[in-house]
Every structure is written in structure tokens, then in C-alpha cells.
Amino acid sequence: MFIGEYKHNLDDKGRLAVPAKFRSALKGGAVVTRGLDNCLFLYSKKQWEKIAEKFANLPISQSKARAFSRLMLAGAMDVDFDNQGRINLPDYLIEFASLEKKSVIAGLYDRLEIWNEEIWNKYKAGAEKESSEIAETLGDLGV
Image 1: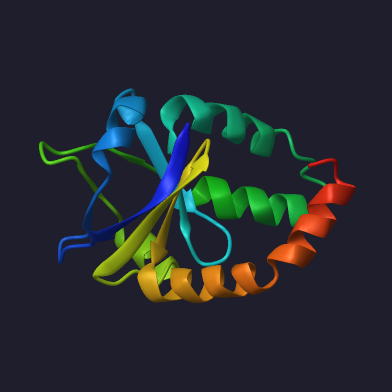
Image 2 (image 1 turned 180 degrees about the vertical axis):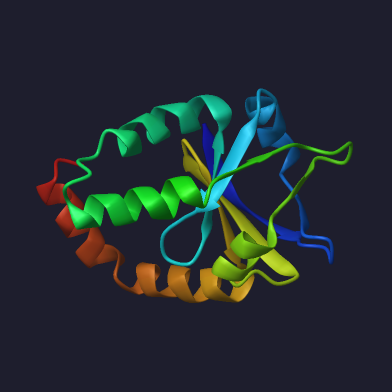
């Protein structure tokens, strides 16, 4: 299970250290792809296979399903860890998420999200302001 919020620096070569506590869960391989809200999603290979199968089973006759599958599947990239626990992010994903040196890795149970620190802080501040309203909506969903 991935939880917590961690600040790490993206270096000039596109390498980003993944928190040590998560590396063992990702030792079987990892996949990074475009996420939502201007971040990247990082999945274990095992979890990615489950998610990718769901995308592959979306109806190709629906344009929004095709668009979402393309966003997630065509944007995906296998990543390996170097000896220092870093992954190398491709340029197109760095651009997509507007990543700069200061980055945030957020654990969200079955995935990690990689954010530009400034964008993350703005997003988080907005979510915190609306937390009561969000909680009320989730209550309607049984959470």
C-alpha cells in the first residue's frame, strides 16, 4: 500500500528518486503514465496489468473511452530503478506534468502520483478548502 507525501528533486537527466519504503513493492517492475490533474501515475507492473486490462476492455465504439485509453496506454512507459533508487522519466511525461526540479511523490494506495511541487501545493490547498463538501459527496457514495 502506498501512502504519504514525499518531496524529491528531479535532476537534469530526468531521474527521480522513489522513496525507499516503496521500492520493494516496485522491484518486480514499474510503469509510469500520464495521470489526471497534471500529474503522473506510477504503478507496480502487477497493478498496471490489472489497470491496462480494464482500459483494453473499454468499448472502442465510444470516443471518450478511446481517448482515455489512448491517454493512459500510449503514454505508458516501463521504468527501471538505478542503484540509487531513481527512475528515469521520459521527456514527454516530464512535459505533460510540468515537472521541474522540485517534485512531490504522493502515495495513493495502489499507485504513486508524481507532481510538480507548485501544482501539487495549489491542488492540495483547493482540496483542503473543499474538504467538507468532498466528504459530503463521498458520504453519498457510502464512504
